[in-house]
Image (cartoon, rainbow over all chains, first blue to last red):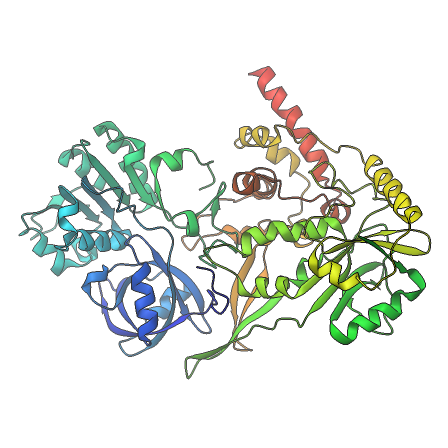
Length: 285
Length: 341
């Protein structure tokens, strides 16, 4: 898309329409953003696939990358869930509905949804990294896409029930006949009727079949590290296991040079990689 | 077609061009030379055997550049794209011009064109000056280029006693010099002799055959900590490198500007993540990134080494680290590893 007039560094003007805390400790806050201009909206949705990310931009604070947590069919808005970590995310947490914000994206490759057609999909997430997996699940749910895929299994773990994201929606997934949902928290709590334990152990218990299946894993590094061998032991081939990586990125379009692992740029060649691709990269993570 | 530019007419010619173009040429700055806009009072430094210290990549990717100016209160911004009028860079060395063609593969891609880079490239004519006597720190022939390499140039000059002999290499170059006097057979013979002597005078600094495989193989070895032992991590090798392009984007709060600045993989903070995790915590991993990028990752991307042998990193390293010696050690190190193992 070379276009002489277009500047990929310009933030797209947007506004926050909904902002709400996602967790009871207020460390996670979800924002839904709408475009100020219809042409930006059309442009965004003609390019967006679940698994992609955006750079959120605030003048005077800078930019930082966040995974997209909404599916296109949900409406003409873009959802992000932001964990309060450093000065930038601390500032974002002060924003409310009605506040302006800039955005660049969608960026990166997204999940290879075309290649997954006709397959069972096993989605495994932990903590706030579940955001792009939520977008993926929502995408598959849509009646237009659902026939493209076979079984859908979602395994989602959080440290406590208070940290579980998208609660109200996920509770309704238990009523769906077209999927399996397994939620887990680390230690038992009153009123918690789902799994208790760490995600790798839950995956072991659920034991999804590797037959005609792909598995996608996103979570904190420690969870990913211990979940990947479980999947390999269940018989998933490295080509059928996917994960999404994060790095300190600036441009998001493969120019600024800082997010490489070996000769791959996370922003441009990723953030989604198969385990086979990761195994071929040097240990620079 | 070859033309001549008589040396004593040089200033006059550059002045004439100045009416239509911004003319940039190497000039004396303290003990070094640097590309600066040509004016009547300019002291040209074309006869320096060394390259300019400060790389001319800055004319396309400035060390610090304002991308937009914002108004926080109104949440509005003005895009800032200060691009040159038509411009001639006169006397750029072939290593620096070929480095620009390497950087084109980063900044001017099908998917995302960097409009700042592309605008400047489009508006610029590059008149190169070949290196008749390459200094000892240069190693362009080792990495696949040469003292009279044509990559990226619109014309290349060879210096004789009283004239520059000019070979036009593109339509832009042909147009610029078409009304210059033609070179004689004698001139052309001298040019051939000088060019061939210059090339023959350069030794192979290290073996490039199989070098990528060697470095890939050494990725997790002690080689990196050994070669990086005396490195201060100052980053001068990357800032002055014509093929290094990493940048950071920051908001300058006092000036209400979003700015991009050269950055360097030699700094700890470069790869530091918000969680505190750093994939390159010591100077060894950072040195590995610098060398692997140039001698392995570039080859994965475009099958070319990402170094044009300009020698700046060798010349200006404050502790005398020499990338050529580092790379020569690599193959020794590998054979030791293999012999022991």
